[in-house]
Amino acid sequence: MLVPSLVCPANRLRSRCHSLDDNEQKGGEGEGKNSPGGQTKVSAMVLAWLSFLTVAVAVPMSAAERIAIVWPTPNEAFAQGKPDSDILQQAGSGDPASGGFGCVRSNGHQFHEGIDIRAMTRDRRGEPTDEIYAAMDGVVRYICQRAGESSYGRYVVLEHPGVTPAVYTLYAHLSATAPGLSVGQSVTRGQVIATMGHTAGGYAIPRDRAHLHFEIGLWVTRDFQSWYSGRGFGSPNEHGFYNGMNLMGFDPLDFLRQFRAKKVDNFAEYLSHMEVAVRLKIATTRTPDFVQRYPRCSRNRCHCSWVAGKSK
Ligand SMILES: [Zn+2]
Image (cartoon, rainbow, N blue to C red; front, side, top):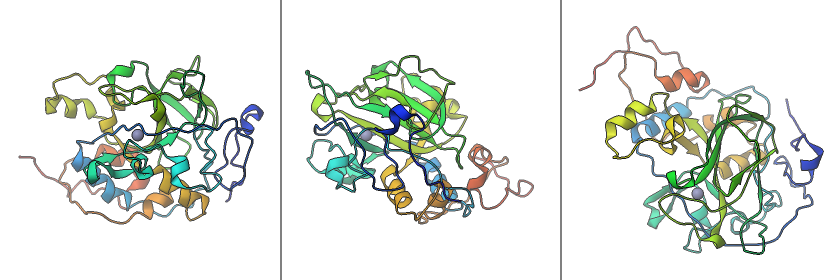
C-alpha cells in the first residue's frame, strides 16, 4: 500500500520539511553555503560488517508499506533534484563526493559511514542555524552532550521501531539539542530535535564546513561492551551500546534516491536488493544476537541443533 503523504505531521513544520516522495518545493528559509567538515568513523568490527553484508542480502522481499521519511535538514537540494554539490558538504578536498558514503576520503582508504549535509543558514558569526529534524517517527535512544568524547561531537541516536528492520538514525556534530529532548522520548517525523553545528572530539571541523553527519543503519550487537573491553583500546567506552563502532550504516543518499524513484518502498526491500559482497559461514552454538534483533534479516531460521563450533 502506498502512503503518499510524506509530509511533516505538524503544521508548523509543514513548510520546512521535505517530502521524499516527490520533488515538490517548499518555502525554505535559507540560502547559505559552506564547505567541508569531515568526520570519519572507521569500523573495527570487520567481521560484523561482513556478517551484515551477508545477512542483509538475505532480507526477504517485504510486503510492508511504503515508509514515511523526511529529509533531516532544511536543505531542499535533494528534494529539488539538484546535484550532490548542493547537498553534500565536501570534506576539504573540494570534491562533493567526500561528503558522501563509503571510501570517499584519503584516496579511498578512509570509510565514511554516513553523509554530510551542508548548512543553509548562518547567524552573524557564521555559525550554522539549520534545524535538524527526526527523519521518521521514532524514539530517542541516546544523546551525547559531551562533544569532546566522540568524533561525532554532540550527537543524537533515534531508533525507529515502526519500520522493518527497526533502523537507527544518527545526527552528529550538533551545536545543541532541542530543549527538553530526552532519552526515551517519542519523536514524530519532522520534529525539530537539534541545531546543526560543527562539534567534534579529537579533531576540529572548521565553521565554514559545518554540516549534519547523518546515518541510517543497524546495531551490531548488544554485547558490544565485552567486545570493546577485550580490544584494549586504552580508553573507556563512553557511549555504551551507542558507540559508533557498534553502528553499521548504509548509504542514506542511495536509499533515499531509490525510495524517491519508487524502486523501493522500505528498508527491507532496499537491503534485499543489495549486491552480495561476501558470504560467510559462522560457527556458533547460539543464535547470533543480530539475528535475534533483526529476524526479518534472516532468510532461514537458525538450525541451532546442528550449528555448532568452538573458537580457538
Ligand atoms: Zn560525516
